[in-house]
Image (cartoon, rainbow, N blue to C red; front, side, top):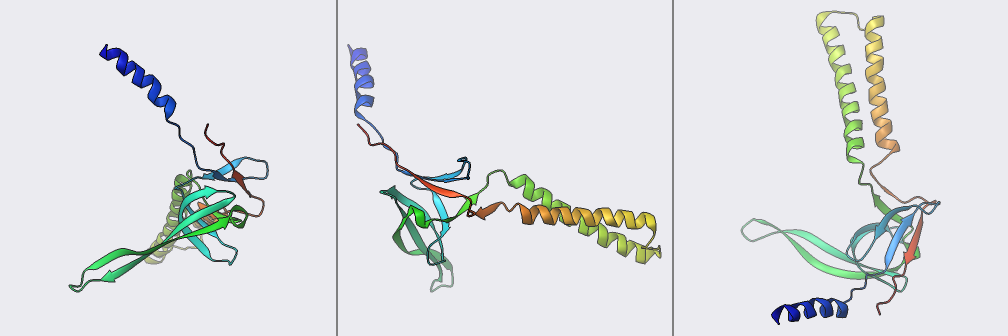
Length: 189
């Protein structure tokens, strides 16, 4: 008989419980492809209509509005000289989703690209400096045709690394061609 009670509870209890997701804000490309999605609890950084950067956590998304909790965190010195970081205040601000025209996008696949660009710039610059210092120390001609080719390759590596870092930033704000879409989730039965 005990087994039937447990079976009854396992069948009836999930039927009475339901969850409803918060509404969603989605950043999409012109062709409709989703770049990033923001839901309740997501961290967000955007530029508001007054051209100020707003950083906070989404408290709620409802009725075409995004409610963002902004924290004022400050560092203080105590009486004994220790440093304490404390939250002074937390304020909730509401923004219409169409006011979120410039949202910071976080690319998840940018770590290797950033590492590669840094290695190219550091390695190329280090080779150039080392080559010139060794040439001057050993008295070898720096303007030799063979040496200039090696320096050109190193300078090219620095230029490619710099271009990779500038042309493909890891975290950028949305562009005018991106659109912010409000997705209303259905109500629960």
